Amino acid sequence: MRTAGIICEYNPFHYGHKHQLDTLRSEYDAIVCVMSGSFVQRGDIAVFDKWTRAKAALSFGADLVIELPVKYSLSSACGFAEGGIQILDALGLIDAVSFGSECGDIAVLENCAETMLCEPYEVSAKIKEFTACGMSYAKAHAAAYDGILDSDIISKPNNILAIEYIKALKKIGSRITPVTLARKGVGYHDLTASGKFASATLLREKLKNNEDISEFTPFDFSACERYDINRLTDIFKYKLISEGTSAFCNIPDMERGLDNRFLKAVDKSSITEMLDFVKTKRYTYTRLSRIVLSVLLELRGNLSSPEYIRVLGMTDTGRKLLSEMKNTCPLPVVNKVADFDSDAILPDILATNLAALCADKPVFQNRDYTTSPVIL
Image: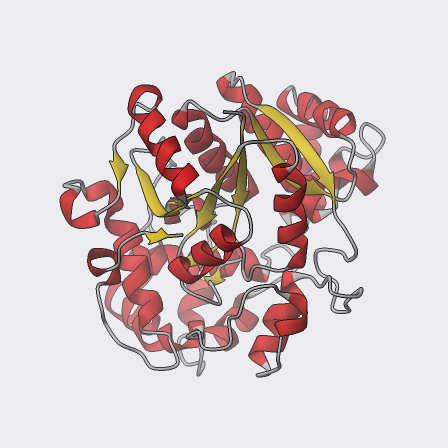
C-alpha cells in the first residue's frame, strides 16, 4: 500500500493538522506519524500526554503513531528533522514524507536544501562572524545567505524545518519523496485565528489562560491533564547546586559561559525566571529551554542513529503496517517497554516520569511500563 509519513508534535492537535491528514488520505492508503513524546522541540513539556495526542491523530486520519525519541525532540531543527527522517526511512515502507511550509513550493525548498548541503566557505565564515557579534544562530544563518537564497524563504519557521527534512533525506540517500502542503489560514506564531484555523502557539496560550480551545480542534481535550515546566524548578536547582558547571558537560547546544549564567540565576523563583535572566539576543529562549531539559535528562554527546521503533498507537491498517515491518525494518519494534531490554529507551522513560511531576495533579506513575499503545 502507498504510505505517507509525517514528523509532528501535535502540541496540541488542531484543524490545520486534520487538513494535512485529510489531504494525504485522498492520495495514500496509510499514514504513519512520528511524534514527539513528553517533551517538544520548543523546549517545553507537551501540553497533553503522548498517548492522548496519539489518540487524537488516530481519530482523524493517522494509522500508526511512533514516538520520536526525546534526544531528537529536544534537539535543534537539524537534529529533530534527522531523527524523524531516519526513523521513517528505517521502517522501509514509507513512500513520501509530508510537511507544511509557508512557501508551498517543493522545488524552491529543494534548491535551498541543495545549496545549504554544499555550504560555501564564505557563508560559514559569515555565520561565525555574526554569531560572535551576538546574533542568534537562526538570524546569523539567514543573514549569511543574503544574496544567495531568498531570505523570506529561509527565515520562516515551517520553511526552515521543511528544508531540514529535505537535507536529512539527501544525507542518507533515502528513496522517500518529500511533498509539501502550504500552511493554511494562519502563521506558525500567529496569535489570531482565521475561522476554525488557529496556530498551536495560540492554542497553548489559551490553555495557559484556562480558555476553551474546542472551536479550533476536532478532538476533545477538555478532560486532559495539563503540565507546567516550572514544577521542575527545584529539581533543576538541585542539579546546579550539587553538580555545578559539570551538569552542563557535553550537553548539546552549550557554549562557554552559558553554564555560569545559569548558576548565577539559581536564586530565581522559577525556570521561566531563570531563562529570562540567562536569555540574550544570541541565546534564544527555546534553545535555553532545551538545554535545561537536556541537563535534567542527562542527554549528552552527539546524536546517534535510532535504535528502536516505539509504537504509541495504531488502527487496523496500522497493525498491517507493523506486520509488513517485520520484513522491512531492521530495528526492534517496541509495543511493551517492559519487554524491551535496552538502555537506549531510558531517556524517554525518564522524560515521561519528569513530565508526570509537572501535571496539575503530579503523580509518579511509570506510565511507559503500564500504558499500552492506543488502538482504534
